[in-house]
Length: 308
Length: 264
Image 1 (cartoon, each protein chain N blue to C red):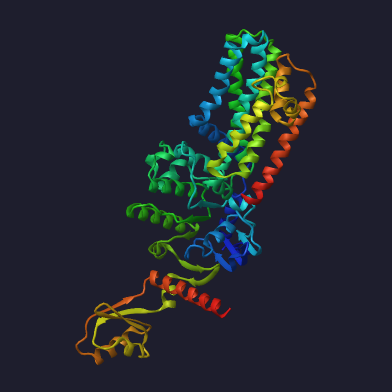
Image 2: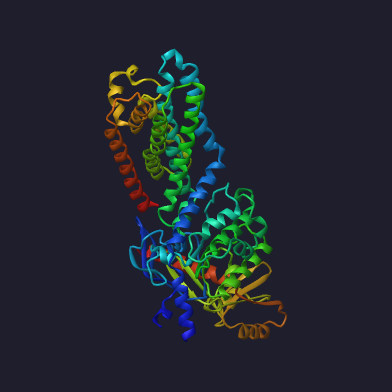
């Protein structure tokens, strides 16, 4: 029974330094069966360090790193994972089918080459040498290699870079199918709509720390704000003083405001300016939430530095 | 709940590999490595052409000027020269490239049996070495009419095939030091001077005294002595040469493996 509680992947208080640089500064992460966790953050935030630790490529200086309750450097733990890395040049002269056959041989009960190829939408490419494929096709081959071992946990590092929209959506559908079968996924991506489309949980990292963790909706709600834009004669400085308004500024002919309470703000605006026009209310997207979160930490560190 | 627990334990049981599947993984790795090199003419052509063309020119056509034993002497020398390349280049260049382009990282993250990567390359090097020595033997017997007994043929074949191992180890070491495009140049800087200083192109006796004394430093010198021994031109002491080559192999493998484990 206790087996059921063992998380698929876990980082507890993990610290990793490279010389003077703290790549990870006390990170906690946990992933359960059938869950997709998106790791977001600017370059150098510590995403790849976290993934390298979970893949057993590097060792932590401090803290716990576990896959299925085991050390990731234990090959038995890694026999339950599939991996798609961002920059791996596969042998150019090997054919797609040969690459799949080789990768599948590492696993105890892999899918057939045909099945893996169909899931990744590359069944028609099996006889082609890897070097002759387009960038998007190569990414799909790497995806097929990641899923061919029937993994319980899949690492997808920027999986859809170089893909067109149609290919990307097909890949998303395949990822959803794997999740439905109980596979857990760790996804890093620069495309926020990708995290929005797939993730149960989003974990935003900056400067080696997790600065926000929760569902996509939580993350949006955490930043909470809605954008209100309109043409008005009221001065933005005056608007900024209203309790409903978090921030206000002029944006071309319009005034731009962010608010936690759009309804109250709109009611007051309409009362205050009867000639108000072109009113727009927008929910903050993940992109805005993300920018705001990471900007906050940047400001915080700048202040820290100045204080020091 | 029972059903859930059961499902989980099945998944766990699935994570252990049967010995047959582990062996299959090794064989697949070997197959892939061999296919890769067979389809890479920039590796295969120089590896096969240099020793055979040199042997044809210097060992057979021009060889008779150097006395009746020249084709026999150069069979050993170019055999040694020929099997250095698949070891040094096959291991060193590919390792340096694959550490640079992310393939090594992917392989380390995947549940590849840890020794499969090296074993795959080693078997490839042994096979290329076998092809090189078979070609040279065919030229020696059919073109130069070197009288060789069956025992001599078998001895030089196995000497050269297994003689590739110390050079695999050296290639492994160089590949663990250098990353990417610099590797072919660096390996040529080791390969060609070492061949020259081991007396593979000219007998050591025509070199300055100092360089003659340096001969026994190089692994290729010892392999050449064994190859000469195999074709009946040796000075004995085969056991010493085998021991020195074994020490070279173990030494370079151990320090390279340590570096790779530490730095990837």
